[in-house]
Image 1 (cartoon, rainbow, N blue to C red):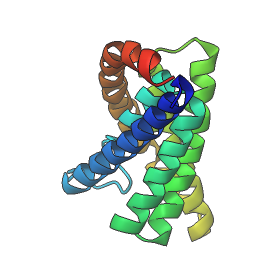
Image 2: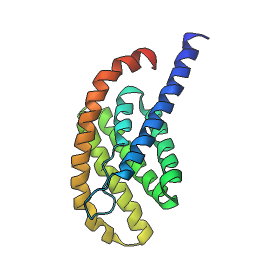
Image 3: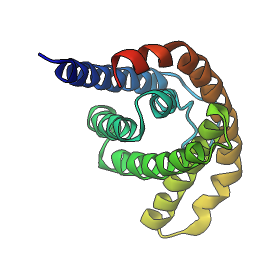
Image 4: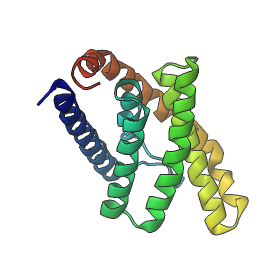
Length: 174
């Protein structure tokens, strides 16, 4: 097997590991009660994998990892609606994070904060469509604050992880 085949196998294994890690983070997050009476506020632990992925494995791998995770989590811990909300938030969030990273204006913290904010915005938009009421946007200020706080924490953790694993990924995976 040539170097290209070994790298392809390593990349597949790396994607599988990231999907599993994000899945475990989603499970852990589901077990942690958030004592805030606003629906939709989460810690965003699985987003840590997406932030790290954007800086290490690239856009395509990160998108695939996030989509597989959202579908698996939806089937395992949720239902069709939760999967639909997760996909909406995930797609909007990922698009914004990719754009923010490409500009070079934002660190991993800024990229993650934008991801958290736009994940909530995507989910609220779907909720407004499903419920046929704009009243759900009354939750946006609380979700905005939560997205900033959790996005900052995830971005800081992500930056720390990226610094440590990026040389390994560059040498062995890419």
